[in-house]
Length: 386
Image (cartoon, rainbow, N blue to C red; front, side, top):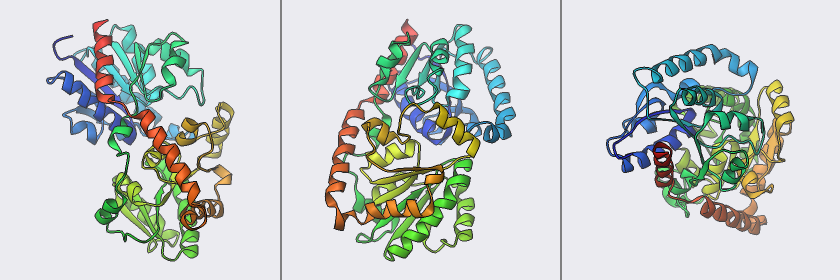
C-alpha cells in the first residue's frame, strides 16, 4: 500500500501504551500521513493518536471477582468500538496491542467482516492458557512477537508471525547511567537505594503495596542508610501516600510521580511486582525480588493453568531462577525483606553474584534488541499488501 492506511488500535494499560507508541513511530516513518484512532494512552497521544477512550478504562486485574466490577463498562466500550469500526470509521487494518481478553474477540469480529487484523504481543500461551492459540488463529492475520521463540510456536499452529524484538530493549540503554539518574532524582551517590514497584493497576496496589511497605520497614531497620523510592502511577500516587502513612513508612519511602525508568536506573535493587516492569528492571541490569499477590481465587485458578515453573519474565526468558520469586503466601514481609537485603548487601558479601546477574541480563538485552518500529511497520505493510 503506497498511500497511508487508516489504522485502528487498542492498547490497554501503561505497558501497551508504550508498545503502541513505538509502533506508531514505525508506522509514521513508513507513512507520514497515517491516521490512527481507537483506545490509547498518553504516549500514543504524543504521536497524534486520536483516543476515543483512554487506555486506563481497560485496566483490570485477576479473574471473576476483580473483573466483575468493571466488566459491564468494558463490554459497552467494546460494543461501541466494534460498531464504529464496522461503519463510518472502518480501518484498513486493526492492531490490537496486548490486552488479549479485550482484543482477540474484537479482532475476530473485525476479521470476519473483512478488516485485516494484527495482534502486537503474542499472548503468553507458552506460560499458561495454551487453549488461547485457537482464539489467536481465528482472530489474527498476523502476530508481532516480542520474544524470539514465539514465531516458531505460532507457526506450528498455522499462525503467521514475525519476531520484532522488544521495544524496551531500544528504549533502555545497554549501560544505564546510575549516577545521572540519582542526580536527577536528588538521591545521594553513595547510599544504597531500594526501588519499590508494587504494580501500575489499582488492584495490584491493593494486594502488593501493604506487604511491600512492611518489607521496606524491615529493610530500613537492617540498613539505616537505605534510601527507598517508589515511582507511582500518577492516578494512584495519593492512594499510595495514604497507604505509606498507614503502614508507618511515610518518612522512609519517598513516593514520586511516574519516573519508573529513572528510579530503576538509580537503584541498587528493586522489590517489584510480576509483569512487564520486571523485564524493564532486567534491561536496567538491576537485581530484583519479584513479589506478587492477588485474590486467593484468582491465584488458585492461575496456578492450575501455569505451564512453567517461573512467573517473572526475566526467569522465563533465562529459563532459570536468576532472581527470586516470592508469590502469594510465600511473599511475607520478612521473606521479601531478607531477599532484598541479600541483593543490597551483595557488594560486600557476594559481588560475583551481581556480576553474574549483570552478564545474564546483558545477554538478554542484546537478544531482544532489534529495530522494532521498522520491523513491525514492515510486517503491517505485508499484511496490507496480501
